[in-house]
Amino acid sequence: MLTYVARRLMVNVGVFLLISVGVFLLVRAAPGDPVRMMVNPEQLAAGGPDFIARKRAELGLDDPVVVRYVVWLRDALTGDLGYSFVSHRPVSAVLGERIGPTVLLMGTALLLGLLVAVPAGTLAAVRRNSAADYASAVVSLAVISVPSFFLGIAAIYVFSLTLGWFPSSGMTTPGGGGTDVLAHLVLPAAILALSIAGPFMRYVRGGLIAELGADYIRTAEAKGAGPPRVLLRHALRNALIPLITVIMIYVPQLLAGAVALEQVFAWPGMGQLAISSIGQLDYPVVIGFALFIAVLVLLCNLAADVLYAVADPRISLQ
Image (cartoon, rainbow, N blue to C red; front, side):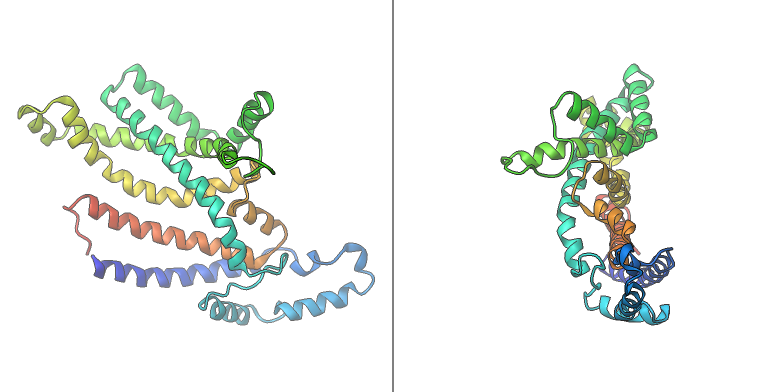
């Protein structure tokens, strides 16, 4: 396994370099001039062009794109992702302070999604073609079809503006108590959990139906194993193995879903930072965010392969 992991890491390094080239070129080719964003339009007629020329030279934006990429890559390999054009702070520090809220939101949503999907998918598989199965199918397809940002807006209207149960935005309230963060977390985490519970529910149901029809299930029943033991000890355990891979694949997609919800709920995470940085043409932060997602995807794919082999000893990594 160690040899496989080392080989995959080497491949991932090459893939990451290719992704970095693509991201750097796409971001730099985006329309607009970040330096002009720093100048008040009223000042353009009073020395603005000279300031823009000096600032572009200072930021290295006048250099050929190949030179700029080589300089950026050299610094990035030492952990220096550059400085934000807007806040003038290191990109690593800007991203670092936003990772915590995003991880809190994503982790809570993933846990809630699994707590809903596994029991509901199991019930739908055991009672196949029943009212419970049809109801789970309708609910799962509904949450898959409706965009998460629309559900977020609807949740704010119902639970914040109408009922007043939960805060509508932000992560904390000035002067709030110890449960203040939890109160702000409920709505965005619940909406994000719903968006992943739907597909997870279908995976659990499909996997469990396939396992319940396997020969080893009939063998266990012939040996006198009761229905709960057959379901929990044998069928459900094996049905959840493919879900491990699906979860690791969905982790980067959770971050993509969090981008929209963080904007809707004004949650101070990486998604809100990415939206504001794109609007302000803050190239270094946008590149850092894109590469963070790329690294997350590569590591999650590797973790999925490893966990799949750990969960099922019959699978060997070569």
